Image (tube, rainbow, N blue to C red; front, top):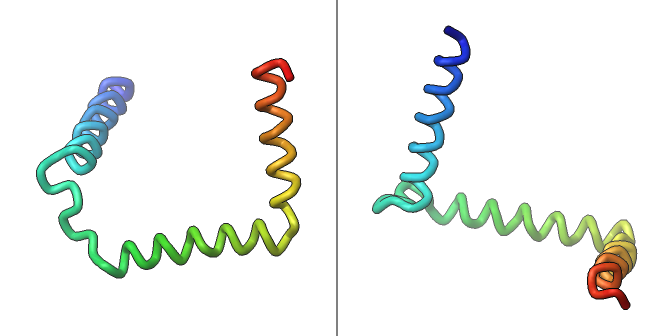
Amino acid sequence: MLKDRVLRVWIDWTETVTSRVRGRERDAGAGFVEYAGLMILIAGIFTLIDGLGLDGLISGAILDAVNNVIGG
């Protein structure tokens, strides 16, 4: 049955991801290049937000959401 196969694949994937995130070898194979690439990606996102002038828009949206939650 297709449903059983999909469920089995989902369970196998979940177990694999869980063991890689929380297991003994959670950072096995992750090296400087991967971490440097992640830092470059994050810096690029921040630069894009600043370059497009979205920082004020995002700050305003967060402020509005917080005010809605706390009733201010």
